[in-house]
Image (cartoon, rainbow, N blue to C red):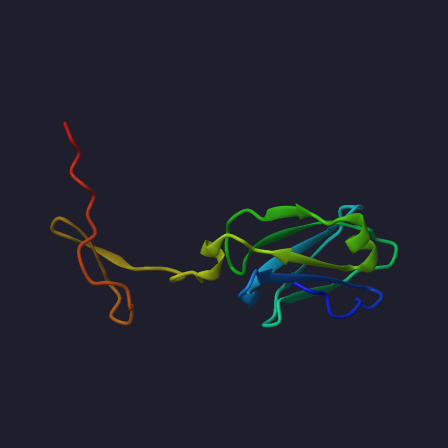
Length: 136
């Protein structure tokens, strides 16, 4: 990722992308200052997540996770030179981040032998979801 232009005063910019594929939208970025103050933004189509922070604050780290996820943030330190320039780039290398969440919720109903999807609009595979028989 190449930083195209400097961040404006009062803004912190985190650029999120996947090497050789480009920017990543939909990544929730939690910016943390040395004082403990935090601000959160979601990366746009160009990969930029931008927050306003007072000039008196010093950026120390970012937490990243998929937008809407309940998982813990993946925390990364911001190098001092990047913090001073108020812009940093983060390369996501785990391909699982490229796949969006399959669904927000999924209704299942109990049937003989297991569970079936109980949602006519779902594009998920129809079939029986069953626990494998235990070996004794």
